[in-house]
Image 1: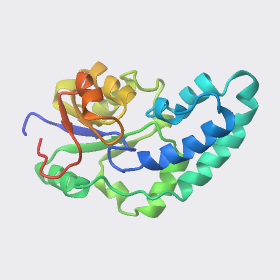
Image 2 (image 1 turned 90 degrees about the vertical axis):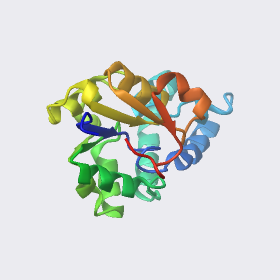
Image 3 (image 1 turned 180 degrees about the vertical axis):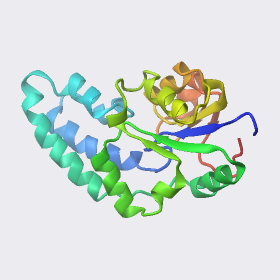
Image 4 (image 1 turned 135 degrees about the horizontal axis):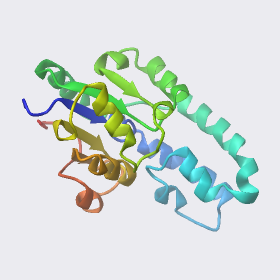
Amino acid sequence: MEKIKAALFDLDGVVFDTEPQYTVFWGAQCREFHPEHPGLEHEIKGQTLDQIYDAWFDGELTKIRPLLTQRLNAFERDMDYLYVTGFEDFIADLQKQGVKTAVVTSSNQEKMQSVYRKHPEFKSLFDAILTSEDFEYSKPHPDCYLKAAARFEAQPEECVVFEDSFNGLKSGRAAGMTVVGLATTNTAEAITPFCDQIIKDYINFKL
């Protein structure tokens, strides 16, 4: 434990079990605007909104982006932000051990305000909260995790990243950090090549 200085957490699928809700949202949008590509909502899991727009809502569909953003903001305001099982106990244990904690998410500040309204205690769980506004490059680039480590004056080898998406897992690996993958969004088999360890939740998990 004394070797670990910081634990860095993605948000969706890692702190909150929200991915099933996003699948419902994007499933409806993809069926409306990309009926020719069934199952697209599963392919775009873990991608940022900009990445989704660039890949699937470009050209003639560029004009749809404001509508999608409006729909997504409304959806996120009413989402159920349920903690991944065991997370609250796990984060409390890290705090007792003196391990610094941070959220490192591609979500924006508008979404985080929805989180804070649903969970007034949220900010007290972390020493830092970094959002999309804090990063120059999106995951899978390591920029976000390296900046989080720098907040704590920690070296990459002193940090553990908790991620669920392929882009996030690759980001943590590219940053040179230990990567714990959560099999909440993708199967354990699928994320194995990108992780040092895999868990389905935080029950009985110790660093």
